[in-house]
Image 1 (cartoon, rainbow, N blue to C red):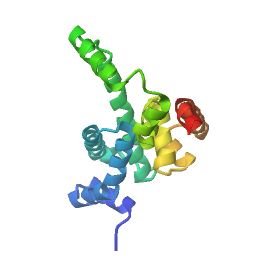
Image 2: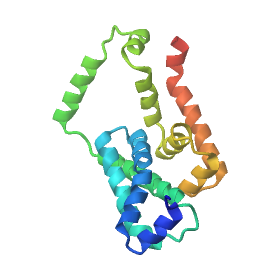
Image 3: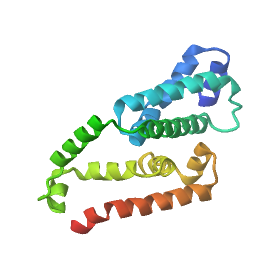
Length: 192
């Protein structure tokens, strides 16, 4: 008979490596899935995945079990994703060198032909890619909450526990995310 998360956490806290491995096995796909949907880069998502489970391993002894293990784990996942994005934004603030700017401009001009119209662009680009790009344009918190709700299927209450905020705050982020996605995708669905 399979042990519950609660039983596995108790054993893992006592140093049982097999119990910790079972916890990782139960949740590894979900953590990686959240990271992939949030970051959209497989290598970066794997880095996030690894960081999440390192933090879980280090923090397990302090886990007081006032919430479900999965809630605690997904709160850590959310925090690692948000931290990753803030670090990534800091990294992107450094200006490009003049040579890099020129190379970027040349490649951008090649990608966008002035004679292209919106219909041609839409035909050449997968709709899923357009939606993913729109989701990536959301603020980090909006994106995380949108992903947890609409891709992972969590309820508002569960998301509020994961990110440690009120349900009303989660609803506000979701409302703003949907409004921003509608604005971003308006040209696409108006032309269809």
